[in-house]
Image 1 (cartoon, each protein chain N blue to C red):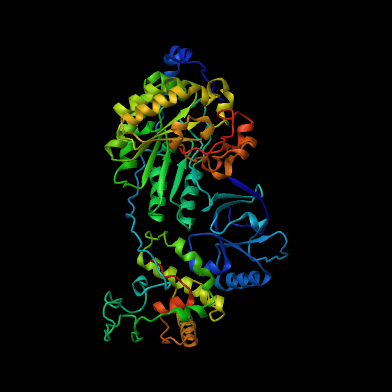
Image 2 (cartoon, rainbow over the protein chains, first blue to last red):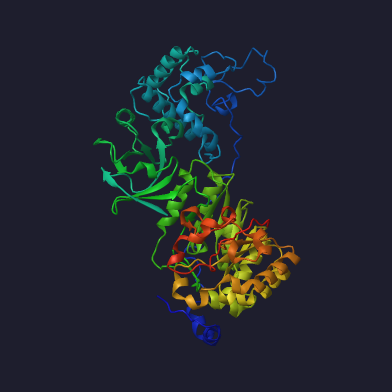
Length: 187
Length: 394
């Protein structure tokens, strides 16, 4: 342990001696460059139901920003992944109450303030599929690996789940399906 | 930092985990995070076992209370008193020492992450004496903590040691927090010395945004005064240079003055200096000395009774008020301050290290008082603690 110089006058007297020793060291790695990182992307405040249509990046249909403003809207573009026909957003609270994961809900409000902007779209899709797979394993209707691949086995399990819940059995991760599963859409 | 002694079965990853309930797993699971699932019954344990074996999930460990008699070869398990763990705690598991360290707990009032133990100053009253060994692993740990936090706090402190010794890596840590927790203020406790180097400053501060708040100590208005307190010749010039650099990057700065004998003696002049030369700081914090670490070794300089210095304290606050620089008192119980300064007193001592003395039980102001450091018994209280009898409007 280095000795302290305990009085001010002694300190002043000894400055020339100490000076050479403690010439401030630069951080060892200061030549290293900082990797540029994307700027924070502020999440909108999340409200119930668990996911709104716009939250779900991988719904299998294209989200439409004007749903709420004109409910009579009936014809919709069907996205590339979609063999499934579009169904208008509906109140999912009844489906939610049947979901096995509802006890996870209280954590929602607080965790909405974290974000995953560091992921690419492909990584986000993989993460969302993995979470869905985990939920399906929990329910006992999927027995494959949680690998993030939306494979046939996963689609079959999704269809089965959708049939049980009375949702269109299209095997897609629609917003309603996610809400019923209790899986939050990856943003 | 809270440490729990635990027993391990299997080999849990010796790294950072988030404590969650089984039911939250589907919602929070990410492949890059590690989870410590708090199991409350045997059926939950079986459920988790099934989930892990079918789904090939490798980033999950289980946490059971000592009373739950359950073993599963496939799942690394931690047994401990689970009542001491809260949900969303961010913990580190240390198999070698059989302990679990709580690095972050949301219900705490103050959050701090230690980035290094090294320092380029050697302050007389340092509460966390520096070491010189290589502790760069703390950087990776801090980034992991940022990723594992689930419920964003209002503010989180990055401290040390001297965080600027991390160089460009400090920016990585800051970015990890600001990116993951965009609503959280990041407080960096630093002596600011290395920011006087333009290359270091540019690496750290370019395009930094407004989420970071720099907390820099200043102990004198002349070089030898400050340099004496931090026992490092040249420190004053560097710190002032660092403060001006922060200002040029439009970064918010809080100045911190620890109230020990050498600083109290010059406090009014120091505050006038701040008012004239550093009026851009958003706040000056006048802080009671924490009687731990080097302060115990330098008791003659550090042990003060704030009551003996009321004149200096009032002079200093007047100087700051005249310059329109906001101020707060930290770590100073109300009975150590003159009534006129109570309005500036803050409840600043982290909950896990705050205690009250016996005399405090009858004090009418206890609810709004900072209290005392838990270790004041090994050192000294900031003044002779005295209950405040009457209800006084501060």
